[in-house]
Image (tube, rainbow over all chains, first blue to last red; front, top):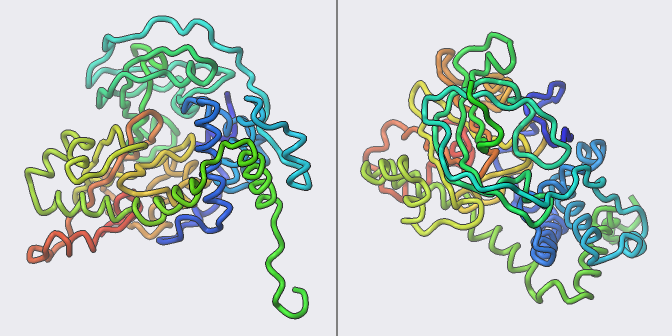
Length: 208
Length: 197
């Protein structure tokens, strides 16, 4: 989905709020939220794709104004409600107020994942173009490289396609490639000597 | 502030939500006893950038190890006993005097847990994720990382299964140092690529 999480290249943000050192958890609730997501993900057998998508479906205003551990809390609660572990009404009653969850899944469940891909279509040095499409569900193809042309720099392993695994129990495995893009091509701003590498599944790519 | 100063801080809405979810999951028997404490302890004391620093120091001290590290990061890091979730497919990228590598995850917060621990807040927040792929030279300078104008910048967006670790350049005049002393020079930020040593 074209969600708020797909932040690469967005403009208007201020400084990065950088600090060279900080505690792992600033508050105890952050550690609890983190642990509860592990608990819920295990209980509902959520794939990595389903887990990430449960954060991506957060309402954009909530996403941008809450810390990452609040994202994890929202994901844990959303998955717990969607899988019937706890009712939303009971969460709100216990919390003594509103307990915002992520929005609904927009993509239909995937019943047929299609065959695994075990052949490498591309080699290091090949030019590839990223498909220009807008899937309604989960994807790990960042918006800022769609339609762009880059060069394969590394062949990685064959892995489960997140777009499939986020939406059911079906799985398809495909090779992944690390693709190098010239920042000047991505942003048309004339900057030089900057390369951005994005790791992409086979089905995100077409021959350039 | 209320008078007296002995009142505990008010419980924030997010703390109330965490407590509600924790209570309901615990009542359903889904939270094993001690689980939260165990996972917290592990990430606060066992897993962190001190692990990555040992990897970097070994690479500086042992050219053959460095070669293995750059060829098969997962296996070489495994030689030092580090691995596991978010570290199963490691690629190590080497900084030189004219090539600077930096890691980011624009879509979420992917980060090499076994060698760096959990990511700092700024790594997960929108400004860093939005800007590092668009204007890395400017963002790095703002973060105190000044690069020569002609330095090549290689940004690695952790969008699939690979997690990255930056191998910083060995600082000058460290020839006499032991591996343990070298590890003491290595910072988290140098291994993310937002600073140089």
